[in-house]
Image 1 (cartoon, rainbow, N blue to C red):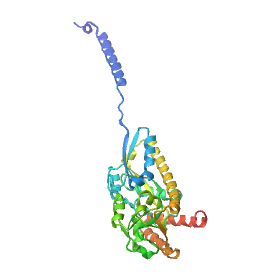
Image 2: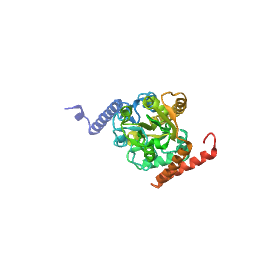
Image 3: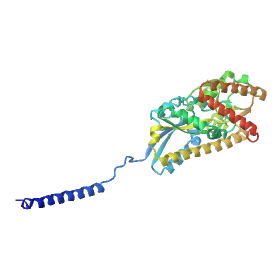
Image 4: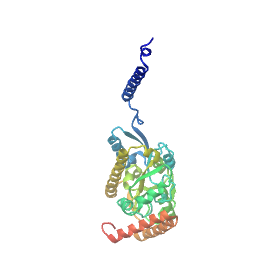
Length: 357
């Protein structure tokens, strides 16, 4: 006979309760001693592709990514890819949207962004005079709100920030000294500016970024309408092109950072803030690199002869740009609001006078 069966019914109940409580304490202790399970077992990994090739990317994005990776303290790591390394530049938006890429640095026009403001990405004719015009219009003339509104309508893509790049000049193997000299010249360039300049006979040609140098050497291209002096020298195009047209079609390129929305939402708030801070760092780096480089290379650069189109003839191009703006404004409410912001900003700058205009 067991000890429990010798006990009275009340003693047996008490004994059972003691065993149950003892077991509960052991179970609770075991549960407390079990190791915690974390959803994130290692650093967050991102893949970011830029529109730019490696020589240019060393300035327009690599310093930012290096800074972010160092400051993230092992919690997150961004792998940087240059133009066409993972996907063709024309497919950047789709790759971002489907999660092949976690982030992208590009302009809307180059990456074929399916929003009604994509025409303003890159070089929009005469929208800017200086690089500071870009953040001024985004921060104080409503462009931040318009860009966010447009991308909020797109599934799984988050627009983060826009900044300024270099002015747009035309670099060619044969000189341009009049509008007539543009006729028939095949140039690599940003879509919107290329479309605008095509009315003067320039022929926009699209090739992979890394193939531009060879295309210039073989004669497939007669020049580039893609950048300013700083990039032309940095990436080697100034070694092939003989002439630089000093008339700039616009003062600064509009470029942006984008994230895959699902990837962005998985990033803790403090790392999101760190990424945005380093984006601002990138905007600052580019603004000073381009601003100083443009002036120095126009004065001290010896690889290309400077040419210009006479002011009276160039004034017709400026007038044509006004018509181009009005045509774009008819495409919808948002494009009209952007053009209205451009006009208001230009009016304020003109009235302000020196040093703004």
